[in-house]
Amino acid sequence: MSWVLRASVIGAFLEAPTYILNMQVILDDAGAPCIDDTKGFEHGYMLLSDKLLTDETGWKLEKRLIPRLVFEPGTEPGLASKVDIVDWDSWYRWRNLPKESPAALLMHYPLTVYQLLVNVLHVTGPKRNSAASRQALHVHYIGAEVELNMLPLFSELALLLPYTDIKMTLFVVAVHSLVKTAKKNSIAVKAKQNQPVYTYTSPTSCGASTLSIFLYGDHEDWHPQHPFIRYIHNKPDAVVGLNAGLTNYPAWQSVILYCHMYNESFAVTEYAEQSAEQQRDSFPLIINHFLPQARLNCHGSEINNLTRSREYPVAFNPFQCPGQRGIGQTRLPSVPNGFTIRVVGDDQQEVVRSVSAGVPGPASGLNELLQKSALLSL
View 1 (cartoon, rainbow, N blue to C red):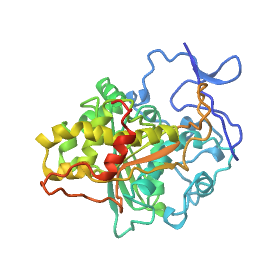
View 2 (cartoon, helix red, strand yellow):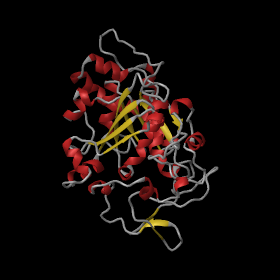
View 3 (cartoon, rainbow, N blue to C red):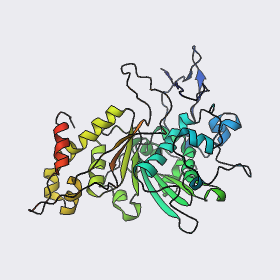
View 4 (tube, rainbow, N blue to C red):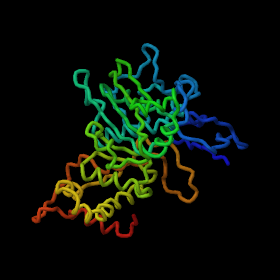
């Protein structure tokens, strides 16, 4: 059994070779790139070896087409705080890449995380920090799978966020499986020793930011009952998930509820705008379903946070993957990391509505969404 990876390149992007990091790519009879046999394939299998891919071995492109991480003197990108990187055009200019480079077909992963942290959750920014005042930023990345094949690409965050020390911890099934099978001297075994499996430091001229990526292998899920999650030193500044499908996987419900109860900044992406809107409308139903149990077991402040009136903005992601997904049954726009959803974040219009009994009930805005969500199933 084989599957074919096709990239539809739009706008100013030209047709270019399609590739997958860490996978053996061949051409099918029609000349399309494909993986001949995925039986037994495990995302992140390169982490079971003792070395990661370099710019050249990972991209397998001409040097001029590669968003390099190791720079010759004078070739570094400018300090990100001095430019506005808001979409693919501005990123390509900043990285001095021609539009024929297919880099966006993979770089949408780190650039989308950047979008979530900076423009959706507002927990950091390229102009926020300085050499005299650095920021330590801890991100919990839930649902990582294909991303395990391309960890070095997330070094882009260190280039985009000057004077920032980023710790990113990856969670869920593929990560757990990878750590569980890690052997001595492999990269992945570092996770068992609470060491980062990948590190990067940006050039001094770019702010000397650092990135450290950790794998959480103790459990298959991110759950508030796990001691790691509850330990104060592991408290994240942001929780993110890409192409999450919040209503498709039951494990997301505990993440949604916990982040509401403790005001943990949480944002995700979805393929389609309609899916994002449907998920947004399901949040009040999830909360309302949990409320009877919460009133018995949770503190008033936690219930207060859970039921306060919130906005859940859905927005177009300017760093979405170029090209429509190959789904025959729909003609609606559907692309990887197409739209962002802020689930919990800094909302100037959030209003806490108190109840004379001392325990807050659902706010009026919540009731309105509950009515819209009546037909949704958990």
